[in-house]
Amino acid sequence: MNAAGRYSIPRLYYLATPAFILLDYFAGVNVRVAVLDNMPAYKGLYYGFCVACGAAVFLLPQSSVVVALFESAVNICITVLAIFRPYLETIRQFDNILEVDLQGLSMFDAPQAVNLLMAGVIAAIAFLQANKTLAERFRQATRGQSPERVP
Image (cartoon, rainbow, N blue to C red; front, side):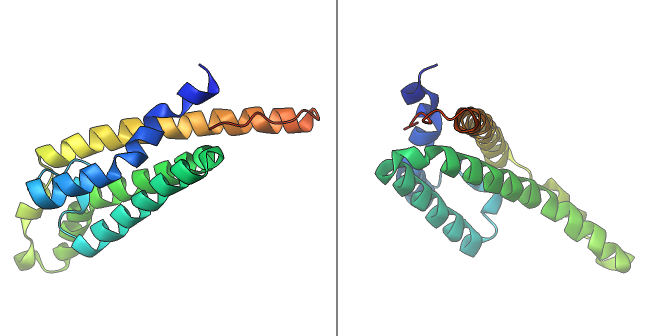
C-alpha cells in the first residue's frame, strides 16, 4: 500500500469528527463515543481531543503516524474503561448487599456496541499502521537513509 493510501481511513475518521458531533448533539445518533453518554463532560473533552487530532492530521500530514498511534491508544483505554465502569460500580456496591443495583449491568446497548466495533476497528488499523510506519522509519534511520515522509 502506498504512503498516501496508508492513512486514508484514520485520516478520514479524524476529519469526520465534526459530522459525528453534529449527529450526536442534533440528531441523537451517537456512534463515535457512545460509551461516554453518561459522562457529558468527558464526552465533550474527548470530542475536543478528536477535533485536535483532525486538525493535526489536516495541518501537519506528517504527524498522522503519531496522532494515529496516540489517539488509538486513548480510544481503546476510554472504551474499555467506559464499558467496564458499570461492572466496577456494581462490584463496589457489594460492600452493602442492600445497595446493589444490578440494573447498571445492562448499560451495554446497540449504540455502544456500534461504537465499540467502529472504534475498535479504526483504533486497531491506526495503531498497527502507525507501528509499521514508525518501525520502517526507525530501520531507515539506523541505516542512514532519509526517512520517507508519510502524509
